[in-house]
Image (cartoon, rainbow, N blue to C red; front, side):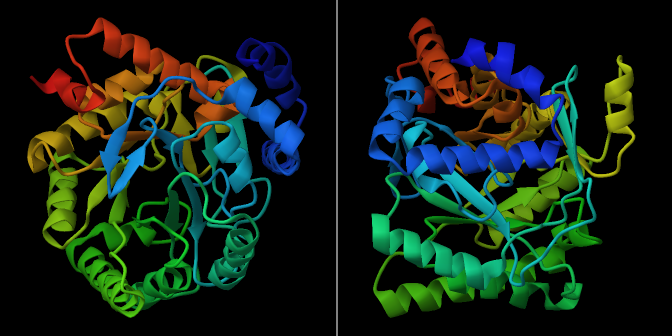
Amino acid sequence: MGVGYRWFGRPLLRFQDSEKAHGRSLTLLRLFSSNPVTRTVLKLLYKPRRSLPVELFGHTYAHPFGLAAGMDKNAKALRGWEATGLAFVEIGGVTMLEQTGNPKPRMFRAPKAQALVNRMGFNNNGSEKIQAALKHHFERYGRPSVPLWVNLGKSKITPLDDAPMDYATTMERLWAYGDVFVINVSSPNTPNLRELQGDEGLKSILLACHEVNTTQSTTTLTEKKPILVKVAPDMTAEQLVHIAQTAKSNGADGIVVSNTTVERPDATHARDAAVFAEQGGMSGQPLKERSTVMIKTVRQATGPDWPIIGVGGIASADDAWEKIAAGATLIQAYSGFVFEGPALTKTIVNGLHKRLQASPFTSLDEAKGASLE
């Protein structure tokens, strides 16, 4: 199916608007996973047979590979992602208020470079509607069989000074449904959002979210939920280390490295050049090396144990192994699914299993950070 997608599915994308193709893919995944017969077919086709367990945040992840935020903002296809074998799913970014996002067109594919450029602008149904959707899903189908992560964004009309309230409100509404929460202060498509990566902005948001976490945990007599911070790639190593240390010292349980970049590589094809000229954040293969270097930098600065989630340019088992060897505990993909299709999960997990067997390590935890030694 991976080859079939590359031969037939990927060429068809050329004739479709990127955002419409994205929406159609989600609709199809939701449709196929709604029927027990076709859901079983999805599992047979795409679910990895190999086990590469990772213990983190109080859960046992079947393997380290999960879905990055942005692919399923409104949690439309949760059963579909489970059926295709992902170890965890991140929804969002979810903002306190419903948002239509930036004007269309706002998502573009650079096929030769295997990159995406988007300026979506946190388009999502808002925390109240997504809360209701998750409540309905949980009541009808139960909790997902894999950890559900929630990416928290800031509403566009909320002033930066009120950002802590905005993030905390969304977290409070979705606390019962999420297993891990990711504070996104690094999207390039919400004006001035990246200013919140600074000391005071980040500290105040973490404090507000910790208060929600404590209150909800006390009220429900359950454990607190892990809170992570997602950072941008467009900074110096010194800035990255400072942000990581600030997040860690203020109670963040880990870091996601990294979001999309506003920088652009040289384009070797006219269509890619036209896409790279568009405003927005770029993801995909051109971000791979940069995100790996960032993971190494954070791992060296924060020690061997603080969780790093690696994302950026993962489209093969070799890409995934590089992120783990750089120091990532878990990994995620977004653009990789656009260019490689739903078989990407099986390809990566099976490939990681082979890499591990050929290595001197007995587990991925032992392999973590191997390239730093």
